Image 1 (cartoon, helix red, strand yellow):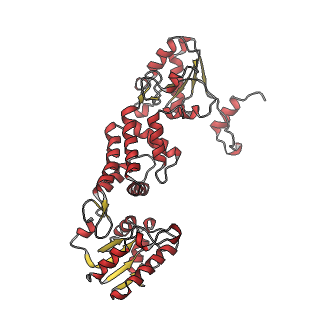
Image 2 (cartoon, chains in turn green, brown):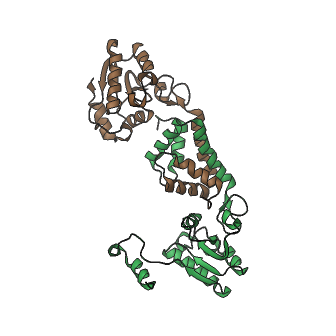
Image 3 (cartoon, chains in turn brown, red):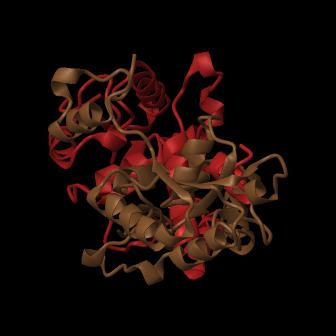
Length: 199
Length: 199
């Protein structure tokens, strides 16, 4: 667009590549950055640079980390006999925010998805099997997404761990708090019926 | 949040300060930036830095510019007898996108707003009056936002220009009161330009 300077055009282009940012949002953000103090705008640029330079995956659990180990793996108060398997660091974060879990994690960095050409070898499943074989873990909780691919990944992993003797569980499924039964779909209600609990 | 690394937490904090970006969007963007190549993420950081270092206001019309003059002021094909007065560079951009205007602009960089403590002297009104007094301009089109403050600003400026003999018009009320120029669509803005009326 001729009416924009080159730098602004380039910034808007880069911003539209971000998830959830359309053309109008990118323009709004670009003008916001033009308006704020140089310090504030450069602090954002610096924060992006820092993340790319300092953040890597924990060498044990593949959570995000700034050094060798993530904060959870470093935490001596965590129950080292419990291992929760999630697809992405975001899932780990959501579980942490419940405050209901005090064990360790293993982040797969994806799920098995033949359609996208993602097989077990592209995930961190080998490292997971090795961790479990070391013998300290008594229970592996599968917390992959409740989708065809997430369930398939959990099944594949539980087969890989079958001979270790470790207990394998998965997150409970059922109706969600605040939902309405008449609008729940078949799969949800089937899960809720099959997993019904004593009142 | 203990489960996030320091760099990621800082990046999310900076992202939530952007307009339209809430906590969840900021997290999504942060994880996106963690996932993409270092080159791509650093290109965004660089684009932000570039904008802050290279973009300034045109010394004639106060549009965004990379040098002394903006692209529009430099364009020899523009009608130098027509001057369109807008509040912000975004408004100029919206009008440019109609393709219906081939004159020059003057960006006020705000509107008179006593409640926010913004008086005429904080805007570029003096420079506008000087430009008009130089004699080349035959018509000034007021394209401030159709709000109480925008209209008030237009009225103030038309009073300042009363003795110059220049024709003063304003955008036709194809634009709806209470709306914002930068978000109006092409059709509305085109109608408003074509049907502009004497102020």
